[in-house]
Length: 179
Length: 226
Image (cartoon, rainbow over all chains, first blue to last red; front, side, top):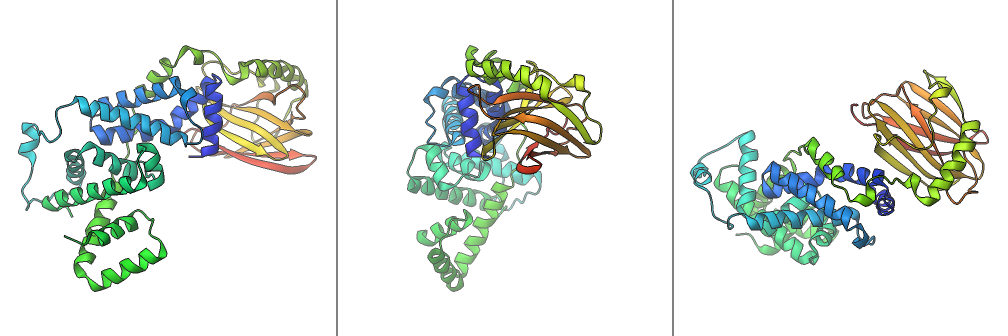
């Protein structure tokens, strides 16, 4: 994404140019939706989060500080929306009966699509703030610096969350025979 | 359990942010410790799996829903209709209508009657846009789609009128007499339909020519599919 082009589009969008808003939406709807999907693992919720995030962004464009990258801002809004949705779900760590039944033993090996499913399940089993770090790094491919901007946290904290998340995922996927 | 320090270095390596001294330190650790090697292999594999989780296209309804719910302030205004652009559009409409001449270099070009006005239809959607910087030619060029047709919108300033060679796939089109000095408080806007240009995600290359010499280039990308 070209940051200068984003700044120009944001300026034109602030002036009320609908086409500029459409272009920003076209650029970022896919990463925003995919990030929400990874965080929530529900396409309908992900769509709602992405929709709300864009509408909030366009409604509050006057509050956007151009010293930050536009994508950091829209990702921050989307992540916060997704975390709100997660907060309204059942408490973390409470598995449904179906999910609990599916948990395989240490000897079980899975392949292909099952690997993806296992990764998604492992992701959903860790705390939302750790999952967010994984999504920012591995779905949105952000640098430590950009992750720090999105999460409004020091880089040190961002790294710590990312490393802790990977450690937990490694342990869970080792248990399932995937690593 | 691996030494947290080395675990940190393995993570930094995965993220591509190791500096030279960290790289050397990690290399020494890996040489000396087979367990660290195994751990590094697992972490790299994990990162590959996470990176390899496919992306999906958002539902079509997302875009429509956002656009339909945009605040009223975006409902009808476009940049071309803001006060500054309204003046520029009126002047450009008069000037451009007389000055533009299409010359098909290769492949069919639009009939002269196909040159549209300066304001795009409400059904058009911007698919790409590029800033021309601050060189001999400045301003912006945007590519729009209206159903199955592409249209270029030029908002160009230059010290003298420029020709633009538009090339995409087998089609080349030359548009004469765009831009010119800023006399109206904004760049002159003009719209060029591209009726035979295809939509396969291909580049649309623009070359700006002034006094017979190329003075700038820009590339936009057509959408993949109508």
